[in-house]
Amino acid sequence: MSYTQVASVTAMNTFPQTTAFHLRLCAVEEATNGVLRLPVFLTASTPALALINPALDVGMLSWMPLDDGLRLGLPDDSHHALRARLYHLAARRLPALLHARMPGDETIPVVDLDLPCLDRRTSTARQAHWSEATGETEASGFPRTMAAGWLAASRGETDLPPLAWSFDQQLNGACARALLTPLLEAYGACDPLPEWPASAFFHARYDVTLHGSAVASWYGLGPERAYDFFKHLSRISTGIQSAVRRWLPILWAGDGALFHHPREAVALLAYSSLPPLLARSRRCYTYDALDAASLKHALSYATRRIQRQLQLWYPALASLGHPIAEQLHPRWHSKWAAELSQRPKRLCTLLANEAWLIDQYVNFAAGFHEHATLSELTGVVRRARTMHATLDARFRRWWDGRQAQVLNGLVLLEAASALSPEPVRLTITLRRKDAAGSSMAPIVLRASRGAAAPDEDAQNHTAA
Image 1 (tube, rainbow, N blue to C red):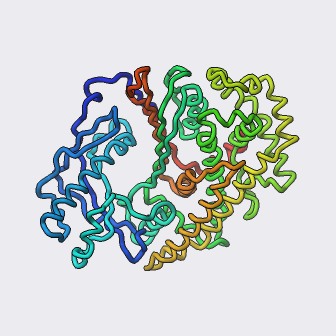
Image 2 (image 1 turned 90 degrees about the vertical axis):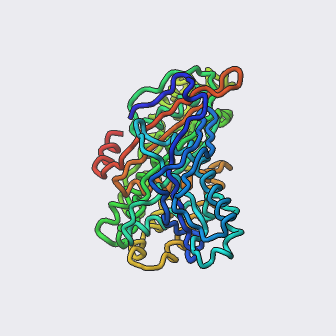
Image 3 (image 1 turned 120 degrees about the horizontal axis):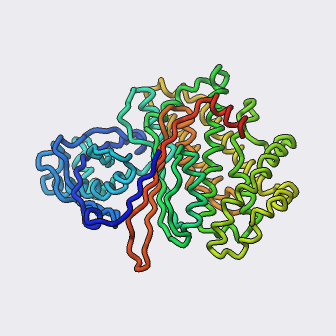
């Protein structure tokens, strides 16, 4: 995919722009403890209007249709107040929705908002609760995602909210180039990054999305002893390995602080450069830090790639005047390769955590086919909540005291994409401030990656 760069701030994006949008309200079925999200109302063909200020990334309601068919069963005053609040919430969500759109997409966006209940029989009791509507359900992550998969698998629903993950961080220009080059390549982008000064300072936002119906693939894996289960296991393993190695440097190396501890930095860069290992058996689906042959295999790959990693990061560290930049000059690659071979503990910890993570997903996937034919969602929700709590606890202490909880939802999205032909879309928005502290026009980078077939995975691994 090509990148879209906004070159200058013009009158069009300096002042608010009028943008049309539709509002879709979704009820949350109470029997599922606030997890099941059902589209129940889409506003009429006449869209509402919002004022969007791209420079400030904010939106406010300008006009809403008078006769939109929305009837909440409340007294008139309460009805009008809540109705206006829902439209205001939708208008505030519009900027993020517009940033995620593909170039040339001129369709009127639809903003989803959730309410606890839309049962008119209980409207009086619900009046106070509705007046505090936030547009967010209490549940998120695994339970909500697996509920969407259940809807797609058992009811054939296709109009489902997309799986979405986002992350914000501060980046300087030098680190941004070192981090974003391999990330965008992994998501299928082939154009070079636009030029910017190494001293530039950005607020970066990452948005990754996948069609909501892709989660239905979890319900079609079949039992663990089924013929195709191992093939699916291999794809899940490959997807998780790629996702964790691709995003951990984004999470921990964006501010350059990790490089104050060069051994940790080199271990992370070596780990991130490993190609995914295709599963060879039910118990051998990634590099095993406890198996001498598997560890030797991983170290062999990692040490051969250290020089390339240092070539990518040394210019960034040198431009920042980082105190240990010279220690990470590419000419010292053989020294760091020997260091990594003699002291592989940090790399081993990353590999062990990765193997644990994949094992959790494999156990999670086994048996899901049974839930697709059930009329109740309770078992799916309970299983998903348990999985979410388990991963959340482990991610809190993922590596050398560092947390990786933010990756919980992303790993689920990437694992689901490995089972589905739906493309994964990445949007990176870089907002730079000028010398006066004012926000300049954003740089928007977009890429889209489809799920690779197993044969392609094998070819990639062989080539690596």
